[in-house]
Length: 103
Image (cartoon, rainbow, N blue to C red; front, top):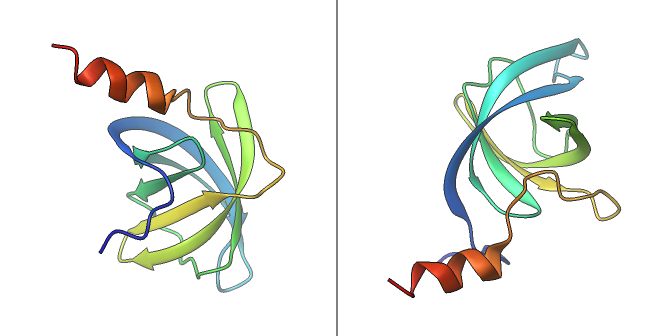
């Protein structure tokens, strides 16, 4: 069962992430974000050791926001924007889904 609160799009973006890993070491990485929504994404190719609950700074193009890690598995991590943060992935879900059905 899908527990997501909003639909996701299978897009892929390069993003910069900063944070502190589970060994209390600061890191910065360029990774890929996919399965994006206005408030979350899946990060791919993450080399730093992350834990659920970690807070990351994520930058996509000129937009930057803080996200919480909600799950990790290997080199992947699911992230969700903190409540007060702006949507940094330019995804207008309702219009995108309306357009998909008007072929």
